[in-house]
Length: 222
Ligand SMILES: *Cc1c(COP(=O)(O)O)cnc(C)c1O
Image (tube, rainbow, N blue to C red; front, side, top):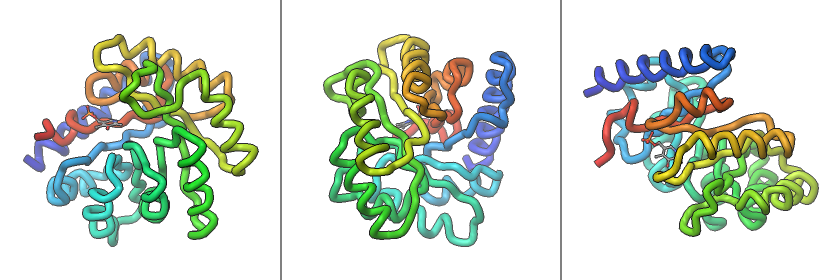
């Protein structure tokens, strides 16, 4: 099983490089975030040993249970929070994660800003955009992005590194990747976190600077 994941990791990395090449970029410009949610520490260890350094988790508590030990003695691990964040978990999230990809409302931006000051810690931030305007999905609506960025940048002094999206399951992801890319350039945001196991190559072709890939590396989640 562990051999499987390291082979799959290599395959994903190679397909990212090829997709980048097709759009005139270098694979080195695209960060692979290995999404380890639901997988146990002993399934993650071989992937770290294979050289993978950026990992994504969607729940603060699950990450707290696994990552402090996984990180110990490993240089350069970068942990991304890719799931929704509640303000009462902001302190824990700022303490554990290096990147929070799911800033989507002023309240959570304020909680993160105040925790970064309190802990004297800087976390890289992405704003999640609900490009499909789905009622059940997290993320700021495209029409409200300008206002949220204004609050983050001018009221809270937060720098926003990138935008993130999760396209609706039943729609052509390329449309959403194109929209996220357009929003990023309109709002002068440099990075784009988009693409998962089923569509990361398309995302790279549409300009993703990071892709979040889980099952294509770790196998199916139960
Ligand atoms: C689970 C998850 C992923 C990875 O999904 P796969 O289809 O397993 O690659 C990516 N992004 C987010 C936000 C997720 O929750």
